[in-house]
Image (cartoon, rainbow, N blue to C red; front, side, top):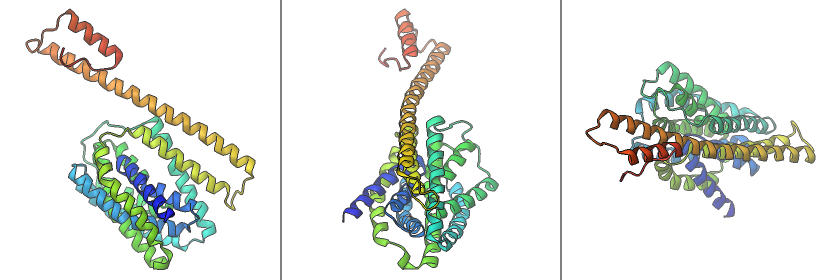
Length: 334
């Protein structure tokens, strides 16, 4: 019962992250199951079965909030399903001794990507509005689906940044479309694992625990996508994934590092992780201040072009100048 409660809480947290960032449900949940000592193929299969329900709920919630581009969902989701089915077959054919470190290495790489991207870059909002080409979406879905199945996660970490980097979709539409298309990927991967492993290779009770937490979080995450600062969330999740999978690799037969080495590596990761979170928070504050300053400058320019709407006196000008310097909006009552 205690394990189920932990899994439900993990599913809730993972879905909040996934629904807000468009990534990391599978990476986070699979990392937890591997820490419990689950077979890599069974861990990925269990997470993908849970994702059938959470991605469906998430897709409906994103659709309700207007966050979904259905053309993108079809063009990236169908190739993604093909890649996921193939990836499930490949992972199921590997021995546990080989699959465990391979999966941890994939998850570690995705964790590093999350930490670096959201700590240093945040979300790129330029060039939004141009159509995304099918010849770009097809290969993207195929690769992302394969990585998702073999790594126990990766649909979001591969698909979301690629679509954001294209600069042709609003961030909320990218997140909503990737989350919605994940239903097709989860369904195909689950079918692949079921055919390769049989029902005995999948822990349906654990999948139910992850699903329960994810279903609660899905509609909340779809609403929070407009409010949660991605830089902070990405840095926090990326650091956790790096730490957990580094631990798995250092204790694997590949490396089998002594205690002194392992604890030294953990200490370095904690320091880098803390620095990344602090930097993300400071940069988030700077971005907010800059956005406020830009909005004030645009409003001042608009008023200057239409003086009949408002004729500022010396006190108004002084208040506006102080607000611009402080990076905060002026009092709307002035």
